[in-house]
Length: 602
Image (tube, rainbow, N blue to C red; front, side):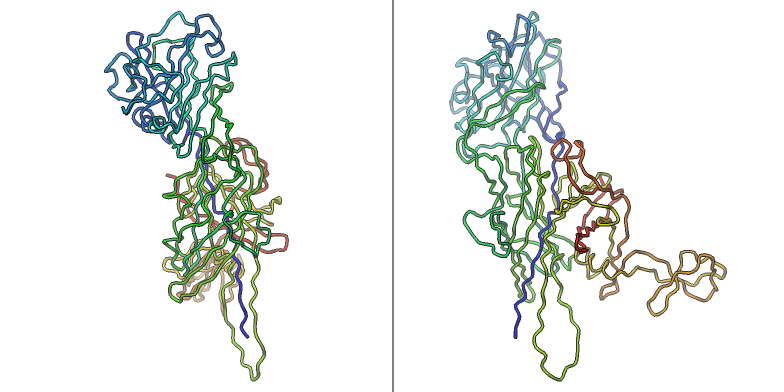
């Protein structure tokens, strides 16, 4: 009889990476030259990885921003005084470069002469900005008698403002200094990558000594999801994610509502009103009064992977759920600890034999890694491996009568092992960098004990080997429990045999530390804790590594949330590039592995 063989594969989360705040928050240090003749001029910085200013900053802001400026002549702070004089009523400031070409342009930014109208002109679009003037903007000079000036600004894609996708209104009512922010209406199709709000800049001294520097922030979080595989000999296709509402793990129902998703506050396609206020440190805070979607739909189906591994020696570059690996803007969701459970269904295809297999599995993202912060980017990469696939092996017996059928049964490995390194942009093959802490979390959520249920190894494989370093090959090598030895040598008579072994019929025996060589016997040295050879005699070697420690929290400086988070896990700091392996032993004494690739820090 024929037995149907069903193979399950666990989907392990390879990595997620959040950029440091410097990737999105600009330098607040004033830049540029001193203004001449007491004219007020502007400079600004934007959230770029290099803390850009000048032309780089202008590109991020689509070469313009809208400035609001007040001054107070009676003490206190202009933002808290209803009668404060308005100096810049939503003036348009454009990047023209040509620093010092006018008295109002000391660093490349110009505001004088632009007219507030909604014409076909590239630069005139203020019908969608409230309030605005209908006359040309004039040069402004510092009032040395004023007790302070207060500036805020907003920037959006120029075409979005012209077409009304973004409408900007300055909030002026009330004495509450924090409420004097903005009301921004955004419509479907808004380019959120170019939607920025400035810090509030309060200037009390030094009028005219430097241009007014505005620091802009994109207050949304950004996420993307990628997937790649290391299954030797197979291509992956027809990948579909399903939400946790499908409770029967073996029943992957296809539905128009099924998607990769998490319960979050996300921008809903359509009109939304964003309210911007300011906090004690003068940084902008965004909220929305419009309806929000309850689920992020990042694409139910991935495209067929265009590349695959060759005998698992190399892994494919991730295929992203968005074109080109671009990020999807979402509202931050700090303080949420809900885990995300995913289910996946995909097809394995062997282009040589034509064999196909339908695979299903699950993965879990710990809630600690789903607390999105403003100005941060997050990459979630899922790795399909052969860790839970049982290889077909053969034995032979000679029989004289029919003995019946043989059924091969595999088990489901539900453990997801999550790895994370702060500030590392994981873009291909799940590579981390050396000299920075790597954090490991197992979905069991139990306390790890190094040396008992948590271990760390390094792994190497010879060039030209038929086998690669994957979770399955590592598991096989460790299960064999065979150390590796060199080819041996005949030592000079009298040489100490401390650390040497003799070999007989494949069995290696340690020499007595006090013994010496006889000048004729071949002696061997141990090269690795575990070693297996492939059909070509090429070695996969695995060695125990030090540096792994159990943790109960990730400190604020390293966490993806910017605050201390409580979590049961482990961490290690690789000192060199290479391949590391984390081993977790569950309560049933089953071992689970995670291969972690590390490249040298640049």
